[in-house]
Length: 320
Image 1 (tube, rainbow, N blue to C red):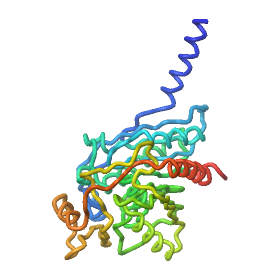
Image 2 (image 1 turned 135 degrees about the vertical axis):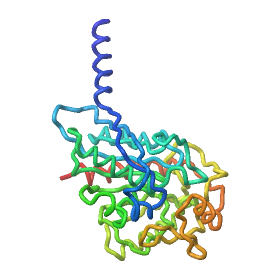
Image 3 (image 1 turned 90 degrees about the vertical axis):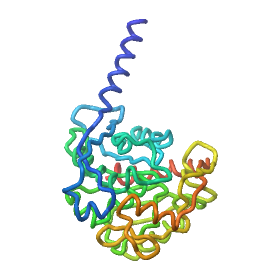
Image 4 (image 1 turned 45 degrees about the vertical axis):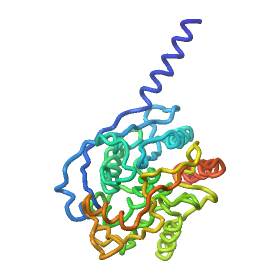
């Protein structure tokens, strides 16, 4: 009996070891979209890592579809990892991007300057470049998903002025963004036409739902495959298993609407001053954002979100 227990333990232990792998790659630290579009080659290099996890039913020489996950301003949380575990149970590999830990940052709540959307978009593509050569990954069957800040990464990863500077050869099959910042609108709405869906709460003021509905209208006018689902009576992070609370020092962007120039500069909503440095960004946000948004789970919306995510990824990664 003891020998059987040891054998079972060994099988489980080594199965877990071989089904996950830390992947490191070189990225850089562009503060703004403008830094990518106009000066990418001169950015400071940055080593970044993530965790690749394969489905438990791995077999030799099998290639899996992949979902790259990008966390929000608070870093990776239990609810994020629940989604990724669900995807692996479906037979999809997952990659947990660690843009924060790689740069020695725990959180960007209330500042949004230490690790930026631009840095994380670059990280995503640099990770994809490495993962596309992994023997267990089907590079033609990769989706991107993210929450809050990671949702903005997911949303803007397909903006062509950015992507054309980073990588024009690799593409995502689908994108699922949870409560992203939709309130910065490019003058040039030239995006890749990748099936994209946003899930957001009706009462969200951290990243307001109204802005995502406005964004959807603009994308629909361009005939993009782009849709938004708004969950009733739900705040930011509605898919958490937690009570609704106030995040006192976090930004409330409900009254912010910003423009993005063709060169990638995000403009303040007065005088059109570009927010291309940390100081300018702080000033710009101070003039339009409040503090103290609510965030936390809604059990009904949480359940719907997991069900939607499962069906969405199945439709775009598993069905021929």
